[in-house]
Image 1 (cartoon, rainbow, N blue to C red):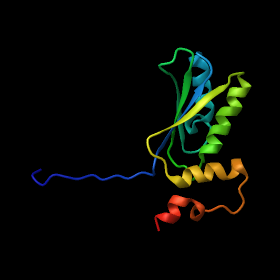
Image 2 (tube, rainbow, N blue to C red):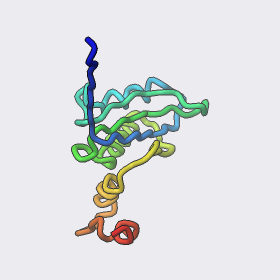
Image 3 (cartoon, rainbow, N blue to C red):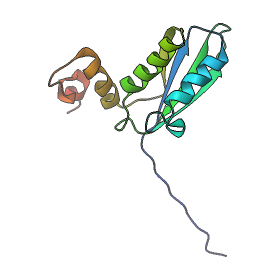
Image 4 (cartoon, rainbow, N blue to C red):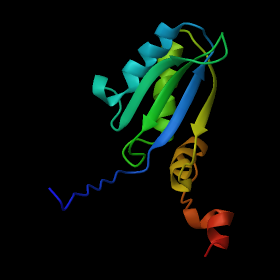
Length: 130
């Protein structure tokens, strides 16, 4: 009892990623969140909820990507886009909250831009940092 105890934990980098929808219908955001999150049978390493924003005509799919190596940002966005299209709702924009590893953005941009053989070494800041 007099010695105390320490507990240490570690997890992968979490990416907080929001997708804002062009609707005020919170049920739509909740439906999309349910379809993409892992716990509901969606994408691996994805947690998501539907929430209201401070804009009255916009609701949001708020996403925590807990392992961007298992499920990339572009894969998550594409899944949200498919569900939004299916429900007849547009996407206004998306947001990264806080910091994001450059490699996560690179892995998302590479398939979207159909980049062949692109590496982190081609990013100016990465090259200058060496």
